[in-house]
Image 1 (tube, rainbow, N blue to C red):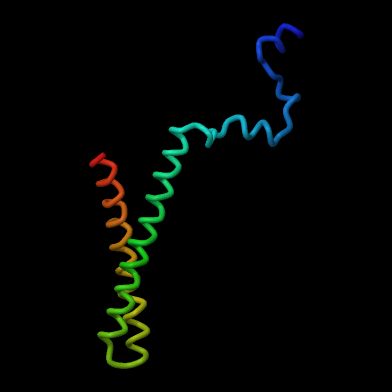
Image 2: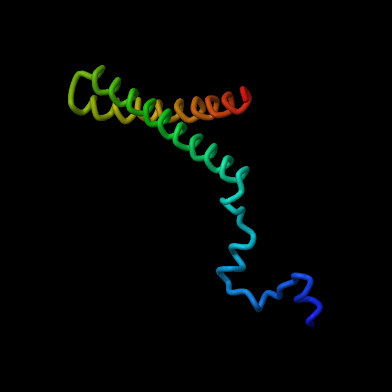
Length: 102
């Protein structure tokens, strides 16, 4: 058994569960992993902004194009949902296009 410890083999019972889980996570200290995490965070932010903007434009269009209160509520929900359904593919296309350009 002493030979195993000299070679760097650590048995599972020697590690706490938290340390064992951390052993398989990518280390954020590595330059490449940090860059990848930053790119993913930026893609997520951009997707939320694009989708939220399309949804807000749909809601505003639904409110302004209606004639009464009930129709304003109905059309705001309808156009907001349409903006949401259109905004997600646009956000995906923007993120993929940015990835292809690099």
